[in-house]
Amino acid sequence: MNQLANKTVKIYGPPGTGKTTTLLNKLDKLFLRGVRPSDIAYLSFTNKAVNEAKFRAQKQFVDCTDEDLKNFRTIHSFCRQNFKTKPVIDPEIDMVEFAQVLGLPKLQFEKYNGQRVWNDWSLRVYDKARNMLKHPDDAYKEERLKRVVFAKYKLIIEAYEEFKVDHRVDFTDMIEEYIENGVPPKLKVLIVDEAQDLTPLQWRLIYKLAKFSQKIFLAGDDDQAIYEWNGANVEEFNEFPGRDFVLRKSYRIPSNVHDFSQYIASYIQGRKNKEFISQDTKGNIITYNKLKDIPFTDQGSWIMLGRTNEIVDELRMKAREMGLFFQDSKGRKSFDLNKWKAIQIWLRLMKNECVDREEVQIIYTYINEIGFGWRSIESKRWYNIHTSQELNYDYLNVWCGLGALKKPWTEVFNRNFSEKEKFYFEKLIDSGIDIVKNSEMIIDTIHSIKGGEADNVVIYEKSNWVASIQNKIGLERSSEYRVWYVGVTRAKQNIHILRSSNEYYFPLSRMLNEVRRAKHVS
Image 1 (spheres, rainbow, N blue to C red):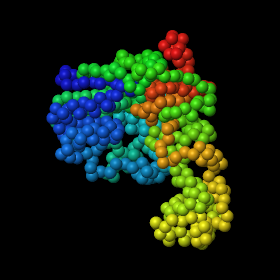
Image 2 (cartoon, one colour):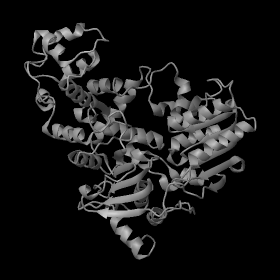
Image 3 (cartoon, rainbow, N blue to C red):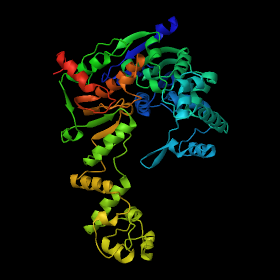
Image 4 (cartoon, one colour):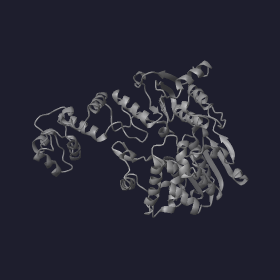
């Protein structure tokens, strides 16, 4: 341990202090001193950070090859090098097949934007057990809300392991195999970002790599450790031997937000005491009873946050009713993009503007009414149209069975759009949005938005039974305070707290009043 302590620096980065930027700048300094990329391992959870590190290496060393950068990877990708000949389990193919073979209920799949996403509870608990180095039976017993009986849980995880025998691997397999059989590279420098989110299994990997490294930099923030539900162990980061270095200046958080967030953080048990200062602006924190009262017309970027996926779905529904254009943290827009394109193409045709063959294909996908395409023989002719030919309504009407009369899109597409969907699209059309651009508003969970920031943050204090602070004790409460701490510290200017009348909620508005009474926040 003393050997690790002598060569390790732990960088604590409170929100907005730039811990990832600090690591990247550290890379630049190493490169200037002549340390080559092949002597460095840069590990992160995100491809974005890894790609930026690669870019800086290539900028400094023009002769830098892929081989030189083979250790600039996400953690799973780093371990993946042991499995080049084995395919990784694909949720859209392999797991669908697995569910069918086992006869799992359809409820094990969640639908998001038309895509099926594997979300089996038993396998999530099993994977968590593996990452926490626990027996699967113990992990099941520790789950407060059990969605299947124990016998079914055992059946699923045993069948899953049998299913993988056919040369398949999952992400946890990669780490387990590397720890067991991987040969660590001899490194001059090991750099790990977001170290507070590492699981006990992943920490075993870091310890293995650290033994073969001359210098180690670990960056993280224990106050932002919000993945304990998925097996992350923040204590490992705090207890890792080494010299602590705290980034002291936030370039994101205004003073009022800083004071409020520190009040929330004061409830976190066992936290590392970190003094840092805010940016020079003051910022505002405002409470509301209704979403419609929030001034979304104000300039700047927006993030709207909910505690759970169900609560986020509620926010998205209300936002659609208000005609707000938004997307999620992965860039998926608040509407079906092809449906939107079909409407826009039809509106152009009604103005006798020209469209191309690909655009014709889009609108014909949604036209179902008799006389508007698919029901007429002529409609098939558009297949033979040259891809570069520009077409107007009259041509499509005469030669492609588009219909005898011009009609509003709400009538033309009436079988492919629900009334709520029509209403939402009508509001978006009236607002004149540009679908090419990304929305200035993101609506997602606090966990999904971690690492993001916006001028304005709307945070809904509604919770549920599982996540509610009222239902937690001890360290569990600390975990919950961390989640909301991350939420409020996304704000660059203003926080808009949406109150909740739900039985279960996080007392953001009440805590704000407590801070104000203490004259911490104006």
